[in-house]
Length: 123
Image (cartoon, rainbow, N blue to C red; front, side, top):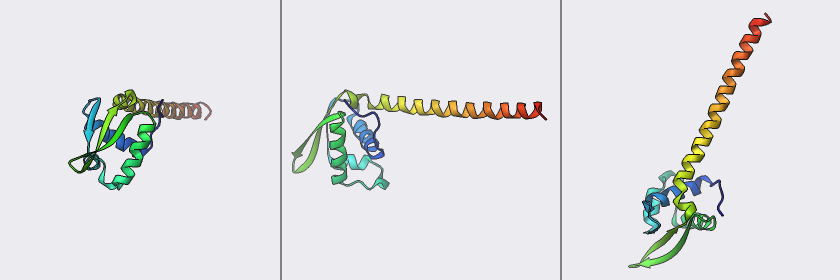
């Protein structure tokens, strides 16, 4: 249905789309609105944004239709289940990574302590 792992650019664009959606299933957004929410250092332009939006659409996050409103280009978004649950999925992924780092840190501390104990025993 959709890919679990998104690239950095896809994550940035999906975060911007989710922010602009404000939890709505359907909404309008102009490319300039999306570009204003994206990090300025990333160097997005309308062409790059369009490519990332199309790849997210193929991954099943939303359906997107380009339209014109008073001569200005506008995207019509229809969020799918993956898009609506993006924030929750992102938080779960973050928690899982933190848990793995925590387990690794605890394992390192335990290994260090066992090494100290063994050094004291065999001295």
